Length: 497
Image (cartoon, rainbow, N blue to C red; front, side, top):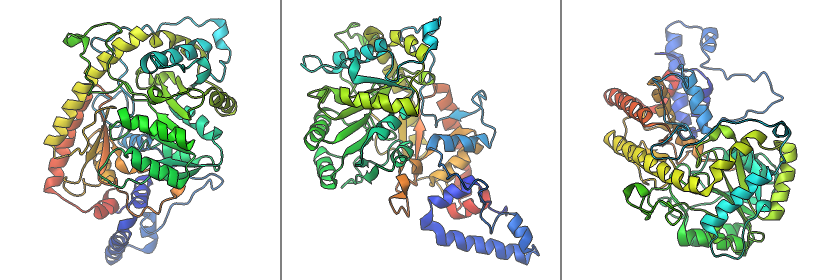
């Protein structure tokens, strides 16, 4: 039997399997005894890394935990993954396919960079783009309302995570609430600045994907939270806070003077709207918009309500490489965020902000969103059918995003463990993201003996359809093997990592 090595994957397995510590230690002792009976000396056993922990040669640095996608990709890299290798199915990527979509308007990405654009852009972004972003929110969500956004309510940032980091840097000494599961990078964002005290919000009913607003009021008010961070629609579950419940969240934030930090990066990816697509006979003009959702719709005063929206070109406009995103907030907060950008990131790329201007034309957005929803709904439905056929269940059918929060509980051991599932997937040239990375635990504030997400993975249907077809085919082969050769996760960890 191969001896388990204390590599990165093994260390991560141990981190999320404290509930298996005794059985793991027992198996390890048995392996050492077998090796000793076979005449293997202690020095050789240590050489195999079975009885010693790795030393850190750079103790002046702390260990920076990888986010879920980066960890999954690093494991795939160990097995030869390359973005150019068409044999791989990357169902872990947190980005949509970026090429032309059927029925979508064309995008002209040719550019002539003027000398002035080689200068630094303002840390709040160029005024032209800020004005277009404000117009987008006013047109879609603030029709008939007296209070309107202006460019001063918009701060352009070099990516969503950079935007969240600016927000965290500007917050005072407060508690910031968060939910689980939620976006993996929140773990680092919430743990980075010591003024912030992360505080997990607890669902009374663990079977609910979205916390009801009355429970939200109880949790946020009872804890005295100063802010709450959440993705909406939710990454990884694909569920959405909308309508009256979203309005209640905004009202509660207003009444409690609580900053609601809304990550709305997937607000165009909705599949349950009532409007009729032009392709199916609906009007092809500005009277017929596809369903999108934003908390901006329920803000009363754009300069008084503590609602901070983070969005950008990364997901909804399918331009992740631009690294051009924005924060929409009261004018005073945007001024703070601009100041934070001066020492954190220096601002977004100037030429690409200018290149983004045509993408913010409202007619383009309407037509592009219709095409996006048609295309991604087809991929969602395909992946849901195929996963069901493989025995992988989905508690919450995603109504939004391009993710499926999949339950592995019914699979043969050890595939019902998300970290083992990834290890086997990458051997079959498939990538997904283990669920434990979405059970965010900044600064290890929770005594997390066993993650509630241990049997879940996130599949992305962001990639092209042929990628998904390859992925489910390879996963099917993997499952068939382990049906015939089941094994405990503990034994797998010691023998296969």
